[in-house]
Length: 296
Image (cartoon, rainbow, N blue to C red; front, side):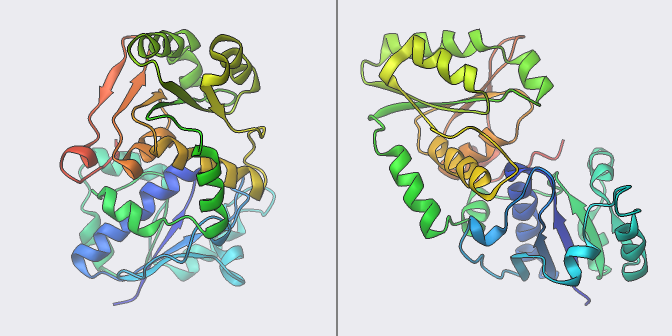
């Protein structure tokens, strides 16, 4: 059977869940898969700048696109005259593009049957089949430099450290549905119950960092760097944030973001998404039965 190719798109959390879905499907069915990591807007970083070599599974999991692949699988834009899409149509008979996956998931599409045709191309930022937290941890092992940074970042954690992921800047849903007061209310409640409380704050907003330092002082641990997705150092710091959250006792996350649920799966940590209409406990299936599938 000709190998299927999956191109990871989106940010860290989205890429990780898509790769986990592909890995789980390949392991379960033996269908050959090649999963490629490409540098795109919002992800100016190579896979091997972040992670150790991934296990092969039923194919190639995961490697950086090289040579002609970088041209072939570039995101089609006006700047490149949509040439990659034309090349893809010449090389692949069966193609699923990322925006289609939401509709296919909703309609109960049979991805296994589609992949069994062989030689398919999928670009994706949504997962498309169930996967386990063990799949995620098997695929994604921080490289030595990232692991050193994770250990440094979490060295000051107390026995009871909670994680906050407060997404701002470009994420309108998180800004609208998860206002800052919901997080401060939770921290105030936690502080009343745990005298040794420390707070790990993962955010892309410098004003939010200052607000928490002003209110909670040296209980707050956060990245000293300003958030950016346009450099290797920026993406590496985001990964450190994710793994730091995975080492906390409870994660409080922002609406609409995949980042904190992936952190919760990595560490099997309880997570609550804070929203205006009432905070909701997210019973990630990976914590209950070993399976997570966020293919809404």
